[in-house]
Length: 182
Image 1 (spheres, one colour):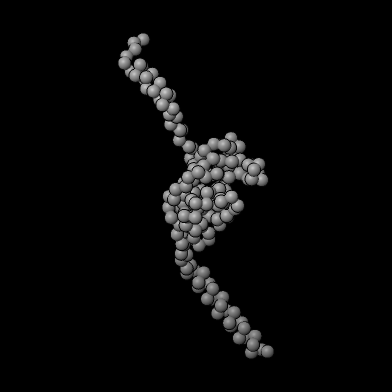
Image 2 (cartoon, rainbow, N blue to C red):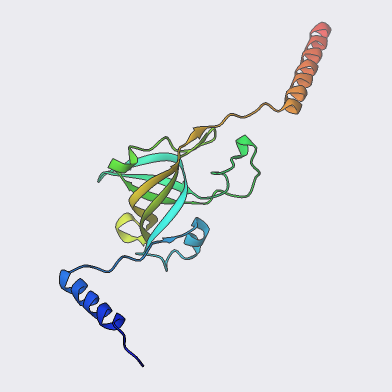
């Protein structure tokens, strides 16, 4: 086998790197959907991962300067039912623990009439952490807002409006007829 100039060059470069004390580049973290994370929770414990999803519910401030939130990555973040999206099953989410200096820069979380901010959260997954009473959560080291939250406007359903008016009219007629008899 022929050895060209490339092999000694790589050896010299590797030796220089080691002598300079440089660490090899870190492996990119794995982006994991929440349902897969739930299935592989124990296997991913202690591993740096990325979760992408909508922050929903409330931000819970706990002692120690951390904020807890629920991150959902189901279809409702992209296409909420209130704005015409289809019912596609249950919400799917996990808890995340965010440093307070990062969390207080966030928009309000999502709820019934609001889509929360969609974020990319990178951190170490903690499966049944004994220091936190057995909670499983993502211990966030960096958070990037992918899409801002927004209010939802539900459109009036004309069929429900007509049915409501007919029922209201019927109630008035029945009340009037009963009042005359008494």
